[in-house]
Amino acid sequence: MSNFQIKGLANYKSTYQKSVDDPKAFWDAVAAENFVWQKKWDKTLSWDFEKPEVKWFEGAKLNITENCIDRHLETRGDKTAILFEPNDPNEKALHISYNELSDRVNRFANVLKSNGIAKGDRVCIYLPMIPELAVAVLACARIGAIHSVVFAGFSSTALATRINDSDCKMVITSDGSFRGDKTIDLKSIVDDALLDCPVVATVLVAKRIGSNIQMKDGRDKWLQPELDAASPICPPEVMDAEDPLFILYTSGSTGMPKGMVHTTAGYMVYTAYTFSNVFQYQEEDVYWCTADIGWITGHSYIVYGPLANGATTVMFEGTPSYPDCGRFWQIVEKHKVNQFYTAPTAIRALAKESLSNVSGHDLSSLKVLGTVGEPINEEAWHWYDEYIGKQNCPIVDTWWQTETGGILISPIPNATKTKPTYATLPLPGIQPALFDENGVELNGNNQEGRLCIKHPWPSMARTIWGNHNRYRETYFSAFPGTYFTGDGALRDEDGLYRITGRVDDVIIVSGHNLGTAPIEDAINEHLFVAESAIVGYPHEIKGSALYGYVTLKDTVGDMSEEELKTEINALIAKLIGPIAKLDKIQFTNGLPKTRSGKIMRRILRKIACGEMDNLGDISTLLNPEVVESIKESALV
Ligand code: 7RM
Figure 1: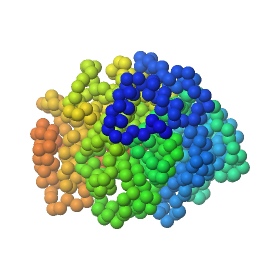
Figure 2: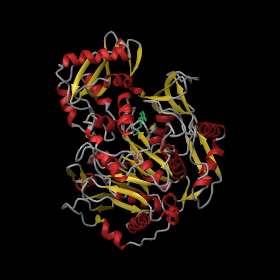
Figure 3: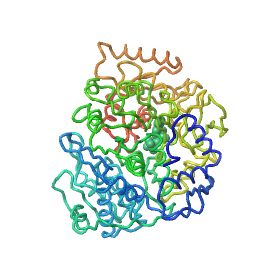
């Protein structure tokens, strides 16, 4: 892979420059030299951000599973492709080799076919983090069916909405799932959802927990007997570069979830390229991303990116706190994990616990640490650096979105420097720009504005399933001619980017623009604070005032709530300025979060504004129960 991995700052700079000067030539070379194609493309790129329309590698023919599986069999057939670590530490880990993965994917692909699934059909996958999930994803890709993975923590209502939006003909699920010391009855959630899904003809059921479930005649089938009867050979479907590979739903600020559509060739090229560079994966390494495959992070950096590189990718079924808060570190030690990729919310949760959870484990295999999903605060960044990385592992703070398909802004270990709370520099091919509210581009360094991307990259989503208008309006209308991310960012004196959060999280207090993230950072610096969230509420004089929700650690010494409030405000005044002091502070047992760990400020904002009865759908939250207790003691 000659031009694949960047080493050294000079190489980063020259590679980046080339990618901006001549994006087509740059991606042409990356795509030509590092993948197998059934036919090469006629045209590298055509694009129009007004329509908007983007096409990469038009005319090419390929199948992504040939790149993720078949091409590795000769040299890496016995190498572990997927290393499955079960929920229960006493259950044996499973090393699935590339040969075995090939066998499983081909059989599964044949099962899809024999159950009436053909190229272009949509298949909903609602599975826990077990090998069947990755295999089902790849089996769809093998035959050109469009997978729509729905995170197996979503409710039956949320599942039905997603199944119907894209008219899925089949659902793949399991009898249930293990999560910590609980089991979840997935099949009955599917049964409930399907009361409202007329198009679904078949449900394939993987056996995981061995519970006694209802099987509906003519619709439901156990997966294993089907796999056993299927042939282990299924020729890969010939796909066009721009054929859809998958749909993945992401929640908008309002209304229906958006079914982001990703296509085949560009997504493959970009996820493989960025995986290789951001994690600096080497042939013998073991790579672990703790995300769920139900999110884009799992699609791109558990399944497709790593497998396209012939990597060993860990799939963990369980949770960071079972059987205790040392589980992540125990797994790192057990499998000698080299690259570890997780979310700030997990880091903060574990940092809150006793250090003895970490210190008992040998973490010396680690080379690169990653974070994704939300801005990481200073305190969490330093804890990760010091206690997990032993100040010897670069932290790649990777900024990207479901819509972007792959990482756009991130440090590259051994090439570019890290800076706490900064995603730092754009990866090759990415042209970020900052704009002010009036649509004027902010040139030069030391600027803060709305983050846009000026030129297409191969893995950008091409549309919203069934609603191209919404795609245009959401991403291409605020700043015509560019892709608008919805995030704010600042560019420091050296040109490094720090993502400040969603732009709708900006609060204007007495004419001062305040980002929620820096205030939360300041609060989180307090020794006794575990986590916090800031929202604005209307104020007669200031326009908006600040309401802080603060979760404390288990130990707060002998301080009273009043003393704590005073100290928190003193800290904010010191770190940001008196203007950012909170008008109200409510101590909470937890903060409402999405299943992927993002704080739901929308709900907190409504509570702070006294709009308790109008919180919208909270059923898809990770912890809907905290909303009740926050409402009860709200300061309104
Ligand atoms: C990969 C993923 C996307 C939103 C995005 C940001 C936020 C993600 C970072 C981040 C600060 C980061 N996809 N975000 N990564 N903010 N630093 N490194 O999370 O579609 O689920 O979310 O997440 O606001 O727009 S996502």
